[in-house]
Image (cartoon, rainbow, N blue to C red; front, top):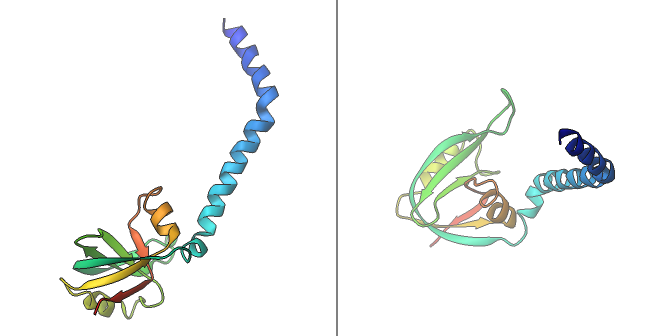
Length: 138
């Protein structure tokens, strides 16, 4: 019985090895391509989410491996949009405290989320929204 299964498996592997290897390689290539093209995909199909602020605090995001640098960010907790990580050119080590203080509890802000954040980070990797473009509702 074991010999017949083994010979069956060897026959399947010989016949399908190229197809299986190509499929695995193609899926890995697509996954890496999606991650690398994330910043560009995030500029597409931006949608503004109007959110009411509950609180905001400074934090550091893990951007490096094993002792690498970490990016400054502001974690904003909202009433109707969940947790939002604010990063980018407006948030640096010197200004992250001022940016966090600008998100007053009860105020309304519009956060613009791109396609990559809404469809890949939130749904596939289940990470909090990450935005770089935001403005206060007057």
